[in-house]
Structures are given as structure tokens and as C-alpha cells.
Image: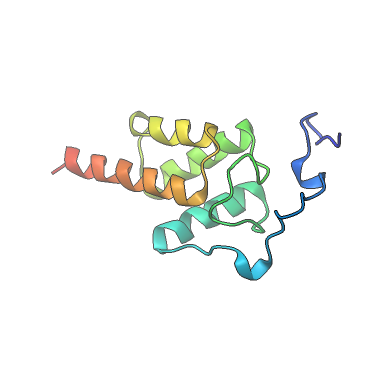
Length: 117
């Protein structure tokens, strides 16, 4: 099995199973501004942008260190406090996609707005 520098299975180096080939034109693009901003944060943190908004965080090269960096960037970009990010942490470690993570971020933002309304 091919391994990454940190000893984990390098999923990107594994052969693609028949039927799982996705043409570049078939990739889902961000549906709205929030998804586009989240996609940009993920791309910056993972140092590549060749993934679909429906691909899971760990499937595209994310790991626990990337998750910590991403959550820090989300706090800074979207002004989410540490007490409001539990759902985001859980979603990342459940292999959420950009689309799923954006929905959770949106609900967290709604909760924050309700607290200050």
C-alpha cells in the first residue's frame, strides 16, 4: 500500500476503481457564495483545489492537522467562537464534504445571530 509522509495510506496514489472515474466537467462546483468561500479555505489549507464540493475531507487529503488549521481559519474568517464550533469539528471528523460543512457553518452562524438578536 502506498503511504503518505506521515505513514497513512495515500488514497490519492491508489488506482481508481472502475466506475469511479469522474470527469472534470462532472465535478460539482460551489452552489453559492458560502460554499465558494469554504471551498477556498479548504483549498488553501490542503494546498490543492482539485476536488469536488461533494468529496469528503479525509478523502481529499485532509488529516487532523489540516482540520485544526481549517477550524482556525473558519473562526477567523466567519467570526465563529470556539464554543459554537462543536458541530463543525464533528462534521470534519465524520468526513464531511464542502457542501455538508457549509450547511453546518450556516446553521452555526444562525445560532450566533440568534444569541445576539
